[in-house]
Length: 316
Image (cartoon, rainbow, N blue to C red; front, side, top):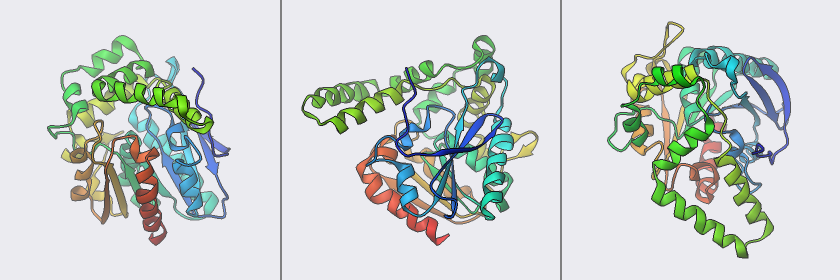
């Protein structure tokens, strides 16, 4: 299935070892760098003109950068979290800071929020502010279904046997966590398209394409993330290290904005909102009614969350 085409135009401005760096907007505006998850593709942030997170940030007066990950392929199966954080993200942050002669704001999405937290914890002086959206922090809550599932799996043995982890396989796992809610809702939406206009039909089909077009994940990075974040709760326990460097949330005195969805079955509220208590600085918080994807494409998010985030960003 072809990758979902972007809505907002961008230019590729540079490459890192494992990603391309896209720029949206003019470099005359202050920079904001998005770190997306290694799972799925970032098209969910730019799915339609009316519900584009990237367009919203552009309209708010920022020059937006997006680090778009390459699919790993067999040659990248041994990439670890340190390669992505200390390599690609560090290079992108430094490139943006050099071009703008100022530190960038950093925005991490879901798993990308964990990567952005690692970058900020290790290099707090290089980041102007950090925003985390639907980011798993404390994975010991009773309602964290992904953490419960992960506890019984030997991920190192899994990736030794399979190499990289397929995007199709992960999509099946995510759908299985809430099958009786997601399936009927999806097909009710399909039936409603009979009376919908062309724009609504296009948005639905773009969402379908995005849901089942997830890239493969580098086996080693997948195993490290699942083991450290979901089995060991390493961010909260202060046991995560990258190439021997300890990742300490308390080292982050950079201003942080943390948002989550109150009905998120992938990153439950208790998993996400634990962040503030472990940081070394101030943290603004925003919980929003709705599910995981609603945080990015929901009408309430675009009316409430992103105006609040933009006000906060401009104040920093």
